[in-house]
Image (cartoon, rainbow over the protein chains, first blue to last red):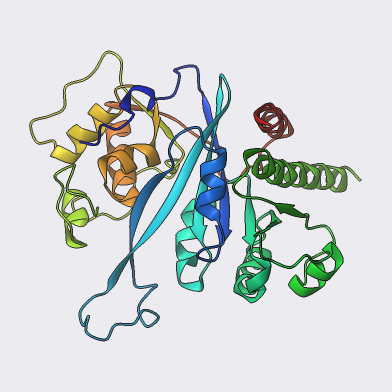
Amino acid sequence: MVSVGSADRYLPDTVQQAVKILVVGAFGVGKTTLVGSVSEIEPLRTEEVMTEASVGVDELAGLEGKTTTTVAMDFGRVTLSSRLVMYLFGTPGQRRFWDLWEGLAEGALGVLVLIDTRRLEDSFDVLEQLEIRGLPFAVAINQFPDSELYSEEELRGALDLLPETPIVTCDARQRTSSVDALITLVQHVSGMGAARAAGAAS
Amino acid sequence: MSGSGAGFTNGALRPYVITKGRSRPSRNTIGVETLLVAADPPRALPLSATREEIALVRMCSQLLSLVEAAAHLQLPVSLVKVLASDLVDSGHLTARSGVPRAAQPDKQLLQEVLDGLRRLR
């Protein structure tokens, strides 16, 4: 059995509800860093066995007969109040992992798309997919020390974002900055709900 | 499933043996964030219980999310979903669910999340 930190492993019994947010992005963009800077526990890793979806995409040379692949998923936890806890899931953005999202995105408050401006093209597929699936999302630019500074206008244009999609710059290593990006996302989701309610009322 | 700490074996086949061939849980309200806790007072598991079921009930001696239980036990989440669902059905585990499916999160819940996040800053 894993016994590390088992003393503070558990949630207080007063917690009644859990919510989750997905942090999606390409490898190396800082998903795990962001999850770690916000999480109150050492981020945990689970591995999920994937079948079928990866066939024909993975390099199978020398691995004949292999029809499954495992996907690592890092996640963290934040207790928001005595009755509410939030989970943050760092999820790879590549096309072959989209089936993994299905279960994970179900019931999620929203998705934070983490982007590295040095590799903007890595995020095109992800953004398009989120729009198709109608998942509420916000874009967070993880500002690396050596990345060039672009204006919000330029980034919006390059990423072809809808006017209502929020975009923020953050430093995934900093807790406050990462929390601010999450606040932006939740405010956006909240605003969408209000807009829907107004639309339904009129 | 990579570690040897929990004593579970690797391989894609084994999860399906543990779940008796099923890949989907019996109830669709079980999610990664579902909070689980062992029934109080505890109910004895049948002799036929697998070691994974025994380990899961033991892991949930206090409140924990399904995904955390899976991570600590080094078992795939999809497998733990099936096991947890069965154990909720049989009354060995109690589940406190996340955001209700199909329904949008309500205004009050979102406000609670925002308030909680602002306190972290």
